Image (cartoon, rainbow, N blue to C red; front, side, top):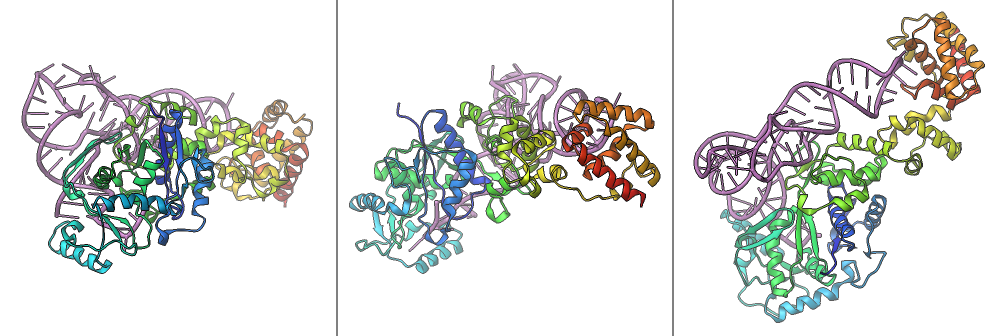
Length: 478
RNA sequence: GGUCUCAUCGUCUAACGGUUAGGACACCAGGUUUUCAUCCUGGCAAUCCGAGUUCGAUUCUCGGCGAGAUCACCA
């Protein structure tokens, strides 16, 4: 059996959004699972929509996710080039085969004329088919006109789709579509067939918006005498707040945006895979390696799935807790608050370990940790609005803080002895933990929440705690 | 309008034709004797409608309704 070769073939027309990237993930999983080959090809035949730098963005995104390719751009391979605009001669060779067989002809009409046909068909409430207007006589194709495919076998096509099952479509789906545009570049419809054949792609995996076009491809495969590869169409990912296919127009976020919002690549991979796929068990969290082992096209869902950000964030929390501290630290680069730049790696890891259970995204790091690296700004309204603390008078507050300061002065400042000190303090002051600990917590952090008090104090250290308590006492006494 | 596809809790989903229709997110309540979170318990909540096949249908068939995709010199 020949080994599996799959591909991802994006167009460099802008950012990759989360809906697109799944058509990279699934073929990649399939290739890795079968020790096959994954190819990255750039489909840049639409010059009008070409966006400078888009290819780099695609590469960055794939790199971040850990979706690596064996052949293609930046990698080379035996079937290159892997950029369509560099493959013009390849398409011309195949086009010539069709011309020689009388299965391709020059389109004599202007765009306006074709548009008129289209409107006419619409007015008659008929589907527009170019072949209804097929010219009886054509001139030799000189490369300045569009080259059209001449469908010769108008019939119903049936084929098998690895995800959708058995599909079929009637003759209405067949037409004389354009193979090569008047600018000399092929259309997707032609180019991908040539490329996939030359690159020996065994499985084409793409979105289900291609289903209506597949009969056209099948008729072209026949004309070209190419054995069609295995095909699989993926259900759409739908916008979070609608039922429509997720698209840039509806504000679909790019993968990079989620990256900036502190989503881990592990989460993204896991989440995208589990939208429309599951292994039949109750497992929710899958690592990259587990996905590679367990993935199968046969278990891909047929209906569309909404992109649920709440679930994404939940899953991110799961992954944050699952990663080792070192792994998490690696992922945290670029998310630390400004003042943390002065801190050592060990110090940052220590703090990260403290807040790990509290993080939902990496973007929470500054809010959770900044008071460990810089003086917080006291905000006494936090005391006034606190349910437990609001009833305390200024005198009571400064007296409690003073007692705390005195008691803590003798502590060793490790988490255990601090806890002992704090417990003793509860007894001597006769206060409830909810009051005493909340007050100390606020006075040293001025944050809405923080790790366990003893851990927080230990991480801050003796002198910092003391000076923050002093400031709080001074401010209260005033 | 033509062609094509899809259909289980609000959301993501599971269920050889036989289950009290399961899990997860979200939400609600409680516990983990400091906040926030983590973690643990419990709760709420679904087979689009109608026929047919069958002893038995979420599952198979047909018809509706509904939703989506597509009908480019875009991919």
